[in-house]
Amino acid sequence: MLGLLHRSAMGTLLSAGAIAGALLVPTSLKAEPAPENREQEIAYCNTEDFAIKIYTLEGSRPSSSGADAMIRIYDRSDRMTFINRTPVSQEQGLKNGLVGTVYENLMGENQWQLFMARDAGAGFDPESPSANPNAGVHQCMLSRDGAIISYGEGRVAGEVVGGGGYYPGDSGASDGNPGGVGGTGGGSSRPSYNQD
Image 1 (spheres, helix red, strand yellow):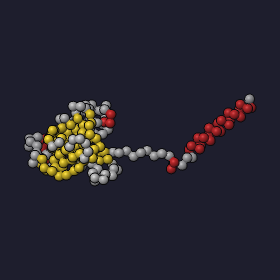
Image 2 (tube, rainbow, N blue to C red):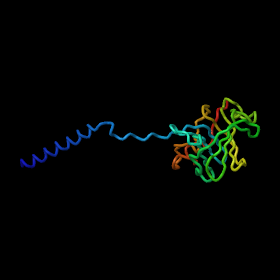
Image 3 (cartoon, rainbow, N blue to C red):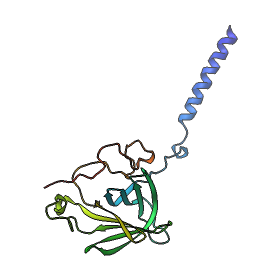
Image 4 (cartoon, rainbow, N blue to C red):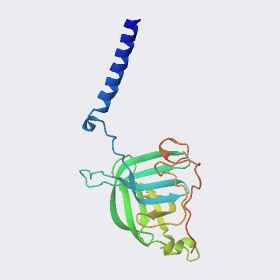
């Protein structure tokens, strides 16, 4: 009986020692979580057929070409993202009489261009709520290999747009699709804008 008590007491002391030893591990040896690559939106274009986002990753360093902006294109008919984290060039341009920024992919088989009008409300029918510059709506055009394939409305970084709808192609959207890109769930698939 005495031997059984001795073994039980020793087991308790060893367990207590293991717990105390684990608590005394210096914090410098503990693993730190990897930093998240959060997206910083530059521009977003919403068309009937596509959702296009130009973005950078927080904490990213410019590549050797000097481009750190990337593009993601979501195809609504296929319900999939077919371009993501692809570097883009940026330059000022003129399309359909509008001044804006042209973003063009630097890699891939096709040449994809997104044109974002510089001025909110420019080029819209004057009766349209989107023509009000305070709404923050920018015309946008998506081209493939030089041909315009889709027109839409969008937003640019630094401007607050009314509504808070769901935007396919946004990272982290809860739409039931892996990676939070595209789909039909999670609310409206079109931007909603203030109608001041």
